[in-house]
Amino acid sequence: MTLRIANAAGFWGDWPSAPRRLLETAEVDFLTLEYLAELTLSIMARQRKKNPTAGYATDFVTVSEDIAPLLRSQSQLKIVTNAGGLNPIACAHEVGKVLANQRLGDVPIGVVRGDDLLPQLEDLGSQGYEFPHLDSGEPLGKLGERVVSANAYLGAEPICRGLQEGARIVITGRVADASLTVAPAVDRFGWSWDDWDSLAAASVAGHIIECGAQATGGYSTDWKSCQLANIGYPIAEIDNEGQIVITKPSGSGGRVTRQTVTEQLVYEIGDPAAYLTPDVVVDFTTVELAALAEDRVAVRGATGRAAPESYKVSLAYADGFTASGQLLVFGDDCVVKAKVVAGLIEERLHQDGYELARTHVELLGAGDGLPGQQPPPEDLREVVLRVAVYDPRREAVAAFTRQFAPLITNGPAGLGGYAQGRPSVRPVYSYWPTTVPKEFVVPEIQVFAANTWAEKQEND
Amino acid sequence: MHDKTIALGELATARSGDKGNHANVAVVAWRQIGYQFLQEVLTAERVAEFFQGLEPSRVDRFELPKLGSLNFLLYDALDGGASRSLRTDTQGKLLGTALLDLQLPVPDNVTEMLPGAP
Image: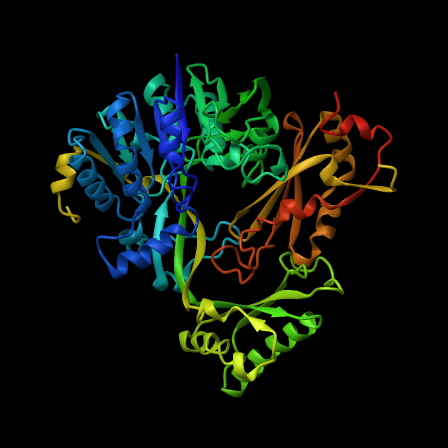
């Protein structure tokens, strides 16, 4: 008995039509949708601060409308997603309304909470907990006063509980990406939570599919070898023994080969022998791949050991402001001219009394996309000047953003690109990775019909 | 292939990612025999030198022989990481493509290491 789990979103902003395209061309048991990169929750924190009903991945509401007909026609289909972000209740409310309007009001929706540690931060701090930085070990200290979001990466267990309580859609906040795949597998096969090798297999499958098309020919240096316009998103077939096959909808673009699957396997990992998830610690070095047929690759040999006793936590704290502006610099002297223009911006700010804390100048087209690689070519006709700054003071960064437009009339000729308008000042939310002992975190799940969620208030 | 050096990109594909302020660059050999060659010559030192413009504090190399892959971790290479970097490439997405230009000595049995080889 094989479980088919697909992924159709690797991040917030991924291809909006990917979920519908996948479901129209393949029958799967589960669709996972992954919306939370390292930074996403800090962006959502800002949104929620302005509007208490915000703070979730609105893409998922649109997707649920888009795929509603497929939810009706494919009764086996279930969805697991971390679209809830910082406000999974509000997300469930909106999705509930969409489904209720589509004759899917009976569909049970589960919401997982407990990852949001912001309310407990002060308490934990006064109990002596220091939230040491994962790399440096430094305590959070005074930065704690500026924290805007603090979320533990929950594991598969609360999702699994939701599925077992009958949820057809489970919406979570921060969970480990692979757990979106582990939960359906445990739900189907009944593995125990200390069956490390089985959990490792499902985690490996989850890691492969969690970035969507990156497993099926996307983000490949061998990009010429497949058709990308209609790229298929990945499907993992998992059986009770933990055997995995990676494939994609037939007839879709992209490719599933040992090369594409390996590239995704080793993506964003540190020590491959110890890949930490909340559910299990996976050893990727025991994994082997075998091409079974065109676009079907078997993944075998994943092994695991006991899960860590702490959850990884991503904190974000308010940390100044940033802005960047670009101008096209044209002419045989473009390299020299671009450097002069960068100097004018800095000099004029200096004359107004501003020394910005950090400035970065790039000549894009002259090789600065990768710092320090090579001197600019001699024969460029045009180059894009990009200047980016950071400063703790908003007004200093705002002053910087006002230096671009004047160059139209008081800078050198041969500059273009002003139609983009004044650069915008953005707040910086710096990322602070840490851990917290699992006993301080209580994951919880509530399951209600879509109709019920549609009627609930956001702060219930 | 009759030149004195060969680009890494003839023997492998690559993919880079980020974790906080660190970048990982994974190299995936086309052929197991190519992996064995890279395991000898594509050292952490060589990769550190190639990316010295990023000023990593350290470069570690991890081996995944069953997958024909070497994973390089470049610590503190991302100008503060995605949340703080002022670079266009805040997440190090260009590093995989860049590394494939690295020039390596040409091994005698290079034709067996190419993607089209039987």
